[in-house]
Length: 402
Image (cartoon, rainbow, N blue to C red; front, side):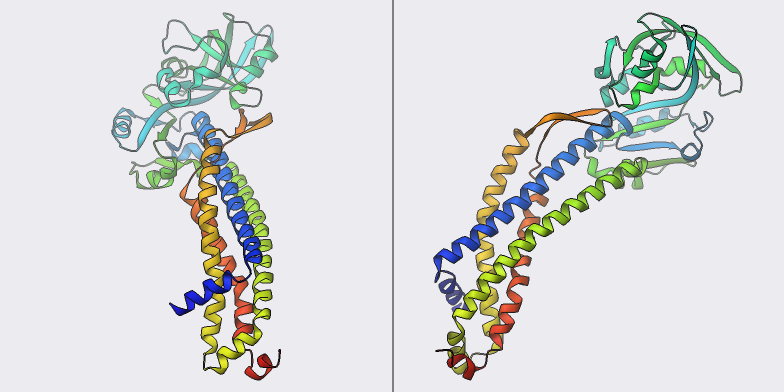
């Protein structure tokens, strides 16, 4: 208790220096917290938008389909699996998809495209695909209309019009030649999205065209909490040869790029705290040099070197804790404001075909606890050298200073 009183007294001895050092600690805390909040919020928004539009949080496929996307690497009799997934408490939405390729013939030109069979209702509920239709109407899952959605770049290359009939030529799952007339119901896709090179049709129409009866290629699962993707995929017991993969494995390049960017941001924060640490070191050193005689008197009275070391360390930690509390209050307020209002960008950024017009922060446990730990650890490290130096002062040398 006596050490704490002495530490407080020494902290308040030079109020101006203490104020400046404390202000720098607060600034460092707030800057690190806001940076973490913006990183978590921005990446969270990108991941959510990307997985929602493309992969989902967990994908269930035939394990052989991963290496060889043949039309026969399929999931058969999948209805029971869908019922099981729908009843799972962690599942929010799910949708089914089938994939193949086809040669398009229209206006005396040909073009190769990926054909995706979807359940229109489930797909729109899970990914909001109907919002990406920029001209025409969304498709229905019926066999009579023979309607399809055509990607933007395909439509531009073939100069297609709404209501126009086009021919698709491909190979069915049974080895037969698949060809038929289809009606363009709408155009889909943004400038850089995957939709621009695709053709979408209803699952029933896809199954009939490719003779893929009662089979699909993929079940895309959207969870209530994306952070549970790895756990959900790991715990999901599936019959061979089915496999559940979290989005981190499905989109490895995307995930690695994000992690590398996060590491770069961590290095920037390290530089910030290094500067803060140097200032703390300078302050504590100045404080100890001014009190050399005082330490000499304490040691002459029988004070152990470890007590002197603890005193220096306690002064720094107390100042860091008080500064962190103030920084925490400010950081919570600023992060909350940025999570609601955000930071508007002068020009929208396109990522994976998705436009982002603002950065938003995320008020999370990480954005508050991490800066607190960093500030305290930085302070302790900065106080080690002054503390050791002060504890080793010889009484005769210290008293000779005055």
